[in-house]
Length: 200
Image 1: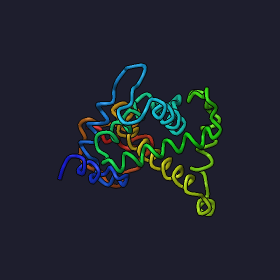
Image 2: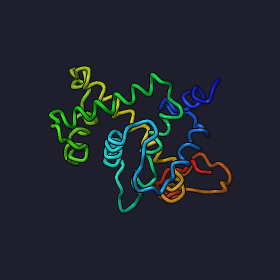
Image 3: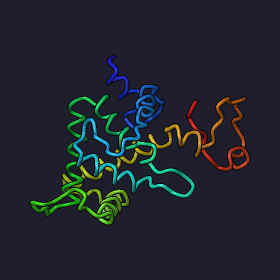
Image 4: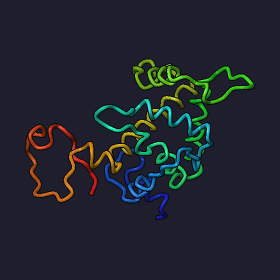
């Protein structure tokens, strides 16, 4: 089995039943401090849209960093570039392009991707990620692409965020040298309600 198939099969199909060490190594490699990010697979405009969507899904709060601070968009682009086959790469790119069509349906000749307002991104996420099952049944082809694409990005973003080094060590309950496994304990008493980090 080649590396690409191994990455897809070991948790990256978004079941994440197991944590792929290769995926974690990709995630930890996304620690660039470069101010202007140049995506590996996506265009600059597509990457800009991806960043804005992910920033709204996992924003910075007083209690935790945001997804942008742990390079989640960079991870998703790099993951698609390194581990997706051509068919899946094409599908991912089409999803982003369909987001753009929905965000800016009446683009003028002098349109810039930065013209899209935060409120427009918010409306997109609310329309699809808060939609009811009966509403989804009436989605047309493009709407279905947007819904499935946003759902996939949200799932990848949450997984990457929770498995990033910063979040694993500073936000979640972290013990670099774990002791005995205690199965039935009160989470409030042991970690103050925080989930355990997967960082090692």
